[in-house]
Picture 1 (cartoon, rainbow, N blue to C red):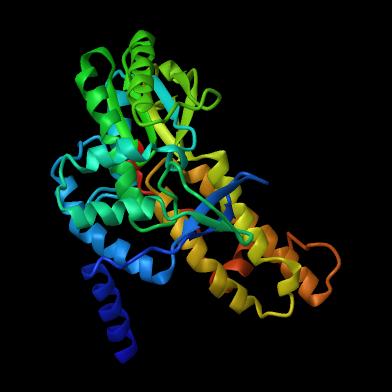
Picture 2: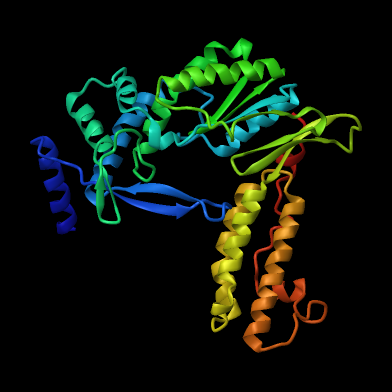
Length: 371
């Protein structure tokens, strides 16, 4: 505890005497979930900088929360991805069948520093706090031992970046709110967002408004990933927050379509990749019980998120895939020829191992309520 106290006292003294200087962030590229070969750059701050950023976030967040738009759901207290998804479901089921499925190109990397700080200064006048924020934005990056300046952006990986991103994108929220009668319902989760509109023309207007708003921040829509989707009678669908959204004809009410959602192809690829890695043949020397103990928290966490949807078929597919992977591992472990599906490695065998089963965990009312 003395080491922690001394560390905090030293850090506080540096801030008080204005001698604190942040260290450059360490650049780490992590794989994008479900996108083979693609990576996402993270900027990892030093421990001392993370501590101070977290403290600043605790102070700043309540100040900006008072002004944040209700259309914003990401990285905000008492608001979740499922809250955002429910707004989408209700809007689509109320007739908003044209969707601007938008993607901001390199949002965290390209936010203009001066535009961002101007937005911060609308609510914060404390000189010391503003100086801290500027120092973090300009801290620089070290990658492969080489230092580079940061001229724009707020790197993903720092505790305060999600808040700064939300502050910047209030411009987008405000401009779309002003044009709501000409556009539609906005749902934003950090830099992922959609606008649900009753007509294609209004979706086109939403795109124009968004382009103009983002330009003031030094940002732009990704031309290849931004599109207008027609949900009418299941014509098209879109992916958002891990789910694929599609209008489906309700068997109870023929001719009537409602928005359903289930895990996207990318989400399915991501969980399968994790299962495949955790059941690789190199774990053949580990007991099957130990493999199950490692696998169950992953399956439970994934299903806990996706159970709030029409995910029954996808869950069954994952259960089958887990069965297959565990059977292959057991075959390799015991030197058995073939996979003996029918006689040895059944669902009963898998259940006896205590594997977590996704089937039967879907939340019925969240999946089937029409409104």
